[in-house]
Image: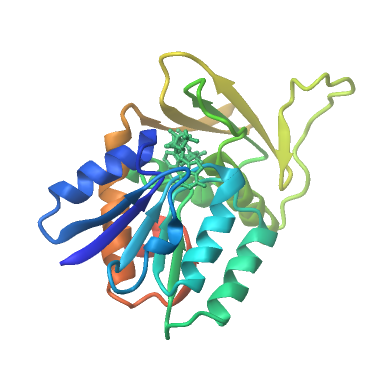
Length: 250
Ligand SMILES: NC(=O)C1=CN([C@@H]2O[C@H](COP(=O)(O)OP(=O)(O)OC[C@H]3O[C@@H](n4cnc5c(N)ncnc54)[C@H](OP(=O)(O)O)[C@@H]3O)[C@@H](O)[C@H]2O)C=CC1
Ligand SMILES: O=C(O)C1=N[C@H](C(=O)O)C[C@H](O)C1
């Protein structure tokens, strides 16, 4: 049995994770903690893997504390800029247990992971690319972690293909052109009724490719979360890994 503790257990995602772990035949819920609870209660004696879904402002601190406490962590919270990832790598270098693991995924839904993958494949073939993410209005960060990850992947693929800047004659911009991530414009929509959605638009003269992923329900993230918990618990991925694509045969 894989013993799983959940941090952020009362949140929208955390509560789904608690339910998913309780429903998994090979897993057992250890601790379910939320804001105000004592994280030091989680130790290797009671937990194999922690699943962390909190808020970007506290996630790094939680992950560093959990690594110091000797447990492996699966992280779904957003906000992982490069400097934060470096801090996690440094903490893992000094971790108390051999081969400790932190796994971070901007998105656990298979539709989003595949959209990201297909965008990377398409990127070298188009002159223009833009990302639009659309979410529920209770989301605290914009643009989404997924959209940042997609834009970075497109930017990287364009550089590797030797593509230059995208055509754009805009001279006045009051913010309408979105945030530029790695040379790619990213636009965020917040709308009651939505959950988590992303469109990647590619354009050439006379043609367009649209890649779209829709998570209508948070249940869509759960197979990916459980897969990550199993992979991490296997001990086969020591150190820091970012992205569910590492666990899929893409
Ligand atoms: N990777 C993925 O596939 C997905 C990632 N996400 C990301 O996951 C994160 C959580 O999203 P969501 O569940 O919607 O957010 P919620 O606000 O619903 O949940 C966050 C929970 O964390 C709690 N919390 C806050 N601070 C702490 C702390 N220091 N220690 C423990 N718990 C704490 C909050 O408590 P309180 O409300 O009392 O402050 C709340 O219960 C976001 O960053 C979101 O973008 C979301 C969906 C999918
Ligand atoms: O807050 C959300 O809901 C989501 N957050 C993640 C993100 O910012 O990419 C993943 C998904 O889009 C849902």
